[in-house]
Length: 84
Image 1 (cartoon, helix red, strand yellow):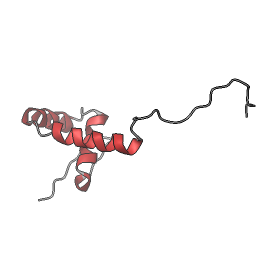
Image 2 (cartoon, rainbow, N blue to C red):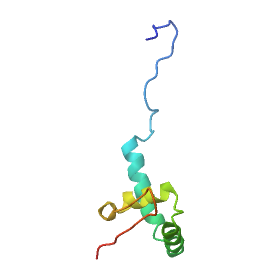
Image 3 (cartoon, rainbow, N blue to C red):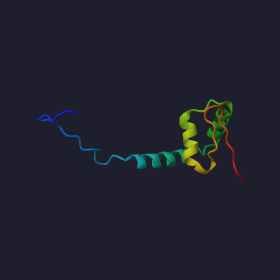
C-alpha cells in the first residue's frame, strides 16, 4: 500500500450533482421505454432479434424494461416468449 505523500490531493467521491449508479440505471430504463414505442424501431428490432443480430445493449434494454418477460437465450438466437 502506498504511503501518504505530503501535498497529495485526496479524492472526495462524486462531484456535486453527479448521479449515482441507481439513478443512471433508472434513467436508462425510462429513456429506453420511451424509445421502444416507435413502430419503425419495433419492426427493425424484431427482424434483428429473429436473425440473431441484435446488439447486447438492445437485449439488455428489453430485459430491463420488461423484466417479467425475460426468457432469453443470449448464447444463440434470442428467444422471446410473450405471455398473454
